[in-house]
Amino acid sequence: MMKIIKTVLITLIVSQANSVVAASCEQTIEGNDMLQFNLKEIVMSSTCSEVTINLKHTGQLAGNIMGHNWVLSKTEDFMAVALAGGSAGPSENYVPLNDSRVIASTVIIGGGEETSVTFSLASLGIGEDYTFFCSFPGHYAIMKGAFIITN
Ligand code: CO
Image (cartoon, rainbow, N blue to C red; front, side, top):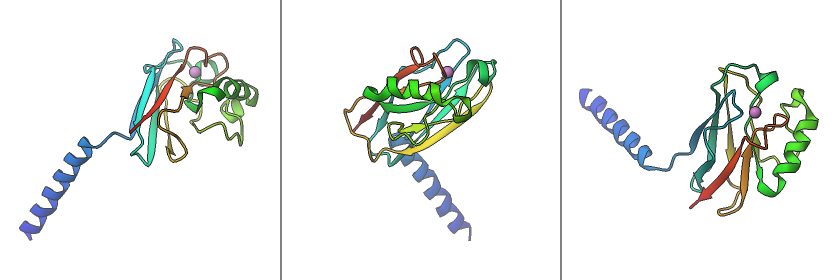
């Protein structure tokens, strides 16, 4: 019995060590009360079948004043999606409904809150130009960065 437990433990340790070597398919990004994301780019491997973005608001201001979300689109669509998001309003988390240009998006959060989104990379291409941004009105000009997919 002990031998079985030992074997299971060793297997667990080895598989955890392997997962450290593999590319991370998860990224945490922080937004603050100064209209800033702490990352200018996010790099993900195409070997990730899906990726998770964790958004953390490290500020104190409420979501209706200094709300942040994380939205991903092709760079060529970014401005149009940001503007459409503004029109969609707070009830839609400033994300246009049923808009195929939106690759992924989170809800709007305020200070001290966290949220996340998990999505597939299947429709995204290596070397294509993607932009992530906060679609809260006025924030997209500053709160944005590059989303890069590598081999
Ligand atoms: Co924001």
